[in-house]
Each structure stands twice: as structure tokens, then as C-alpha cells.
Length: 421
Image (tube, rainbow, N blue to C red; front, side):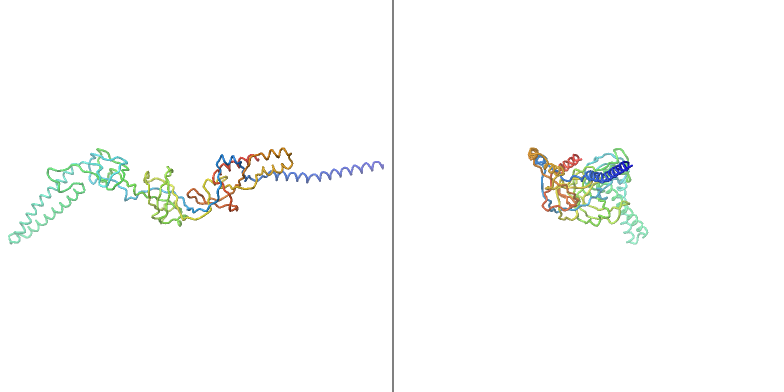
């Protein structure tokens, strides 16, 4: 009996001891798990390490953040327009058949230049009427003088004098009307005689400009409602910019606009604001800002779509060259030279303390490196190859910035991050 009690007691002590071990082991397991999780949440790489050879081969250049007088700008779309008083649809004042066409599309014509000729027998009738009225006036004048002489000598009736006077005035009115019609037709009334009746007329351009369209052809019939050709003076081009309501207070007469053709952005043109609209354009909620095109106008045509940059007031602001800024994940960054070390170097130094002397010597023979830190910035206006920046976090005033080769430094950093994972 006594032996059984001793056996039971030993068994109980053994079981209690095992439970304590299990309880003690659970916190240790939790600590190990937390350490693993903390080690797994690695911060993104911000330090790039380049050797002197890499810096030299890529051409990485360092500089400072400079204070630049940059012009803030507003971007807007627009259309090139020619005012209606610099466009012309050429028509004939009288109906007729086209006999000659002297121009082609793209030709430059001067005001008054003959572009076509038309023919119609009715023109001869008009000249005939003019000559007839002219002859009747000579007879009417003689009759009026005769009736006036008779009336003055109490030998003629007053009504005969009045009738001859009315007839003379009527004929003179007809003559003036016919003279004006002949002048409109391009015929000099003084040169009209029985042996010089013309059956053809010329059509001239009312303005100087470029022929943009020809509607008639030889043999076709034209009248006052039929266009023969269109002429446009592209030298009077102006630019209609569509500016949103929020940007309208920044617009002023006299501001400079740099613009490029939407379909051909290689060449830049200049314009100057001369008028600002006072009403919205349809339902677009934009206001037309009118600009006169200055300088080079080669290749510009009425109706072309453009993209313009309006220059606002200048301001002095911290800036770096455009190529010093890189974009990643919809954010913008610059790189500055730093004494901070990459994560790989930090671990390597910890391991070096436990390595042998010969391994340390091999490590000392590694090529010299320079470290660069990735700094987030906010972009501002750009002008003359520089972009204004505002750093998200404060950096040293004398920080050396990568002004050339930032793209390569960023690529090196991305590759280092991939290897780290």
C-alpha cells in the first residue's frame, strides 16, 4: 500500500512538470513569430549605392538646388481663326458662263487681281441701252432749249416746256444708272461706243490673300448667288484659347502665349492676348481668350487645333533641372548625396565583426561607392529647362543633388530593392 502511494505521487509530479514546460514554451513561440513578422515587413529602399566607375560611365552629375526666376503657366486648348473681314467669297455681279480661270487653290492673289472671266450677250444689251440713252439726252436737251425759248417769247405753251424738262431729267437719271452698272461690271462708260461693245466681263478678288477653294469651272454658269472662289488672308490669323472659369482671373491683356499645333508639336509659335471674352462658350464652361499671332506664321491655317501655354507672373523659387526629377508610383523624387548606408551594408558591417581577418581584407578591396538618398518632392512650374520643387521632408541646405543621371540612379535603386526581396 505504501509503495502504491509513492508511485502515484511521482506520477503527479511528472505531469505537473510537463504542463509547466508547455506553458513556458508558448510565449517563446509567440516571440519568435513576432520577430519573424517584424523582419518580414521591410521598409522600401531609399538608398542607392553606386561605384565611382558606374558614376563616371553613366555621367552622373551633382549640383545644388538653385533659386530660379520661373514663370508660372496655364495650359489651354484653342483654335486658329481668321476674322470674317479677312475672308472673302468671290462672286460675279452678273450672270454668265465661265470662260477662263486664272488661279488655283493655294495661289496668292492681290486685291483687284483678275481671277476669272465670264461671258453673256446681255452685257451687250446694257451697253446698247447706255448708248441709246446718251443719244436721246442730246435730242432732249435741244428740245428743252427750243421749248424754253418759245415760252420766253410767249410763243409756246408752258406744259410743253414742262414735258421736255421732265423727259430730259428722266433720261439723265437712266444714264447715271447705266453708267454705274457698267462701272460695276468693270467697263469704263467713256470707252463704250458702237465699235467697242464687250460681251465678256472679269471677276476680281476683293481682298489680298490665298485662294482656299474654287467652286466654279470653265463652262459653268454663275450668277450673283454662285461662289466662284474663296480667298482667305492667313496673315490676319488670331488664336482663340478656351480658358476655364477658375483660370480666368489670371488672364490679362498683353500676356504672352506659346502654342504648338496639336497634330505637329515640333514647332512652337507665339501670340499675345488682346481681348478676353465675357461669356461662356456653349456648354463647355470655358471663356474665349483672343490672341494675335506674332512672329512666324508659316504653316498656320484657319481652323487648326492648338495647345497653348499662357505665361503668368514670374516668381523666384527653389528649382532643379528637369532631368533631375524622376517619377515612380505617381510621385516625384530627386536624389541627394548622403552618408547614410544601404541596408545591405549595415548587415554586412554587423557580420564583419564575426568574420575572419582574411575575409575583412577581401572586403576592404571592394570598389569605393557613393550613396544617394531618394527624396520625395512636389513639382511646380517649369521654364527654361528648370522645374520648381518643394521637398516633402526637410533636407540640408547644401545638399548635393543628382542633376544628371537621376534616371540611372533610380533604376539602380529599383534593382537593389528587387534583390533585397
